[in-house]
Image 1 (cartoon, one colour):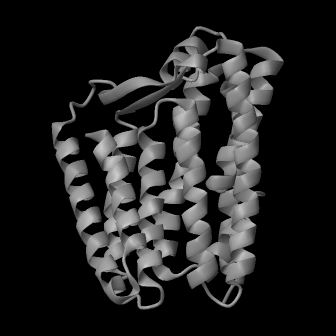
Image 2 (image 1 turned 90 degrees about the vertical axis):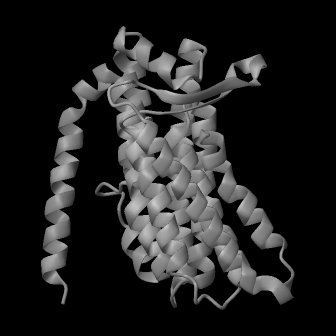
Length: 293
């Protein structure tokens, strides 16, 4: 079921992209149907979820067995609400875009591709799979801003791309470091090892900081936030909705899914940094809002 939820929008995106110009107007109805069905499946999944039952609806098989990479999906009490949010907000964004008349098939294909990445991030339990979906989100959002944004859309899109790419590179370094230390990409196994004190000392600190930057850019946390005002101002309304409602939550989800369970000792050591930057972000945002007309 989770595979259908993740990849149904991908099939719909491909169908939209392959439509001839004479039938480009049908792209919006393909997108509406795909996102509505996808959200319906998520609602059914939510109704079947057993609170307190741990990771559920798991799917797992070897993907690249030579290095231990798996196709591993599942949801729990952290990821299921985020998956629900992704499905709901993408459906709303598609409905809000029904009057889109400039390159409609490309627009809806990008929105659907964005949903694939968002859904995948929230259900992936293998680090390589998680990273693939995380990076996938970057591509359609870049084009949504660069192609349909405001006057400074290219500047905003490139800034968004570069900031996110910086965080992604550091996250990749952290993933590789964990693999070299534990010889697994399985996020649940890494969480068990983390709870047992496998990752400590300078190693845990540097890996934690690598993940911290990767996730903090997405939240975003001060001082890694400067891409966000430009992206929000220049992005078209539907893309801005998805950016605010779902993409920014991916960073917080990353902290809860990765940093806290896998690197608990480093998290405890650096909680003062997280708290300090969070307070600065709140106060800075409030002061900037007061200063604006």
